[in-house]
Amino acid sequence: MTTRASRDATAPAFAPRVMPLGDGAVMAELAEVADLDANAAAHHVAAEVRRRAPAWVTDVIPAIVTVTVLFAAASAREAQERREQASSLLLDAVARSRHRSAAAPARTVEVPVCYEAPFALDLDEVAARTGLDRAEVVRLHAESPHRVLMIGFVPGHPYIGGLDARLAVPRRATPRPRMAPGTVAIANEQTSIYPFVTPGGWNVIGRTPLALFDPARERPSLLEPGDGVRFVPITRDRYERGGFA
Amino acid sequence: MTLRILRPGALATVQDLGRPGLQHLAIVPGGAMDPAAHRIANALVGNRAQAATLEIGLSGPELVFDEPLLVALHGARFEATLDGAAFPAARPVLVRAGARLRIARARLGCFGYLAVAGGIAVPPVLGSRATYLPGAFGGLNGRPVGAGAVLPIAPDAPALAAARFARVSARQGGAVEVGAGSARSVRWFAPAPSLPDADPPVARVVDGVHLALFTEAARAAFLAERWRVGPDSNRMGYRLLGPKLELARPAEIVSQATCLGTVQVPPSGQPIVLMADHQTTGGYPKIAEVIDADVPRFAQLGPGAQVRFARVALADADAARERWNGRLARLIERIRWELGNEDG
Figure 1 (cartoon, rainbow over the protein chains, first blue to last red):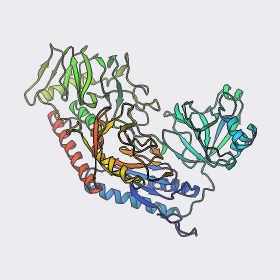
Figure 2: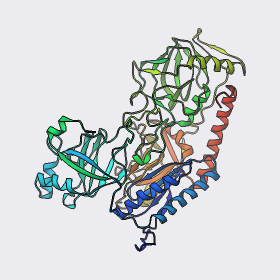
Figure 3: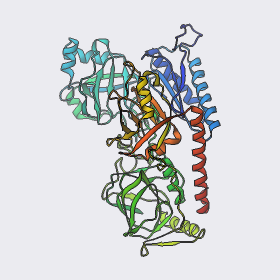
Figure 4: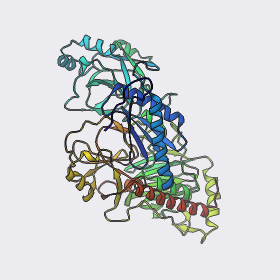
């Protein structure tokens, strides 16, 4: 069980549990619940480990409150040593991270969203469930201090936290088989944007004309872990005119 | 320089060793489902391990070689013919221009690799030629290789083919004819260490991080049962059919990294073993992790196959890794010696 140290200026804020994830990875768990401070620390730790990683570290995966290091090894001894070294890399980075509050994202990405028909499939339902009107739902979504908690599942797919608590609605009982790319959807206190056609059970409130993922771009993923996100409402007309990049 | 597909197979895609290092953007490394067979196929034609091959799942395409090329088919054992004559698998084959290769059903294993000297020359995407189907990128326009597809081959492939075959056929036993002048090959072949070697095959696992969340009965059944690979399995994951694995009580798991070989259990209670194109994160409880050394063998199971799991300690997994890597390295070294050790 993880216990959190007190948050003074010198003590690390997190006492992570580090555990093997299979025989080729180790994972540090900074918290047991989706805590925003732990999330900010996870991104800092992941960036730090990536910066200091030797060549045998093949991937560093920050998730909501965990950071996982994958390693390559040829021999048993190499595997054992690298497992230990990867654990040390993680623990050192956590110790150096001190307390990172989720205060200021390094960059904020503006994401235009059309919250109108035919894209906002569940906006009426969300309005009914929350007791707000449509315009209020859109306003609260656009004004929430969104933050990318993780890029996960498929390339460029963001899990965005910070949604105004008044908009928290559960997932739909029956997932839709095909969400169009760019679909903006909410569930609980998160927003998600679907980069590809995939099934999805979240409540659809709009669509962005931006490509969430394009392997040909210098930065293939529109959003990266830790980014701030500002959703900017656009009309259907503006959406159709295009020219976003 | 091309290789033309006349009829599609069940699932043929261009693959290499994938694109590691991008999982923080949820870009899975992907690549060959059985990287060992991919490596051996490449070694058999004198390529480096990273060269792109055609991965052939379950049943293969029919294709024609537009140039004289040096090719090798390794991994799953297919019924395969070249211009109607039995095609010699698991060895270098110098095919004539215009020869037709027909790859039918896999009789043993699930994924085969057709390597061509010089490699399949589709443009790399994010550092790899591997096809990633869910995102429709990599390989041949991000799609399976279908009827009428034309696979580009390195322009120097015919020259490489002649030079490499001359060297390999100068060794052990010389060249042998295939069919009526369709191809020339050699007398030896390379073993396929990732094909099933027990009935049912046994995949070794280490404990998953959420093992303790499962009921006693679920933990016991996971190791005791013969599981069957379900028909809706794919390059992302193998769905296993068997008893329902239940949690002792509902668990709230915050999404975390998933790995190649992760055995996760969704609410249906039917485990899914994550394979090459797996999602990078997930919130389902993980009961076990197939050890790295056994992932290529697991990939070769394919739909309908049975499998058992055996629990091992991390130290056993490390020892298995060393044995597996050593076996593969010695095999490839031996093949490279037969081909005259060109290309470093």
